[in-house]
Length: 316
Image 1 (tube, rainbow, N blue to C red):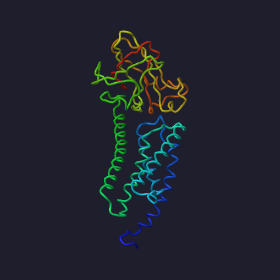
Image 2: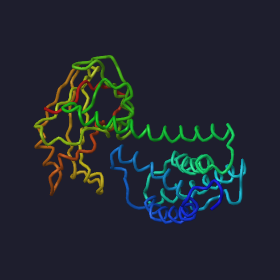
Image 3: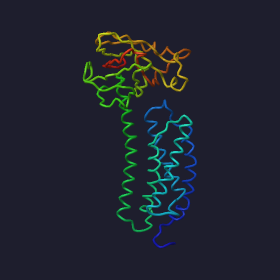
Image 4: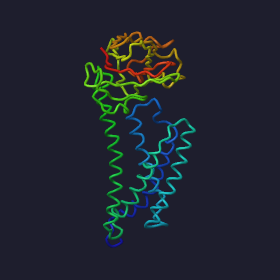
């Protein structure tokens, strides 16, 4: 036995690259097949993205680049190779209708950096310097940041689920985590809530907003209530569309979702819609009211820009 070595550590050290290589081969295909698609919820997407960290940590353990390089050359070589490889993976994913995410490049690096930074500290190969300890701590903080981001998404999605009968909590200061489109928080015309959402509508063919992060299970409710404020003296016609997950994963046919027109007079307008009508809207099937995925509100070919405020959105 080598003086100072731990029994079994050398055997484990020889097996670890083989095990890491086998595990990485099992995980790697999931970068391109399976997993979340564009219709999946934020939590699944965030949790799935952490797989980049695990995969590249395993690949680094399997390849063991410290056999050939050390010091700053090791860090530089691994970083450059992973950036080139990561960009290639993102381009391939884009060609397979997968979302390209530049942050995946950072996750790839974190996985490898963790192994490179912590291996000397954990194996006690030699006396480690203070600088190496600081680098290892910095990489660990990057990992904590990614884990914390996923934890924040989980907490937010739990809140979304718990906020029913509200479909949107108007206390949020950043609607961008829930909506897409040109909208801002406003203190004007608030009704049951402390603030409203101001929607800026343009003159393009379709101009509006979409609520993409909302409670999905509507089956215990009977009606949808939406209150809007039209600050103009001229009426305004908006289209409301609602669809479930099945529609998002289909060819997006017009008759496979719920569509209705809302004509707003000046001032406050409240519309109450029966959920039974929404459920029966798709042609040839029933909308899955436990998997409602998206709600859109938009205008069509406006002759001039308009503004409308969303005051309340709830189920009853």
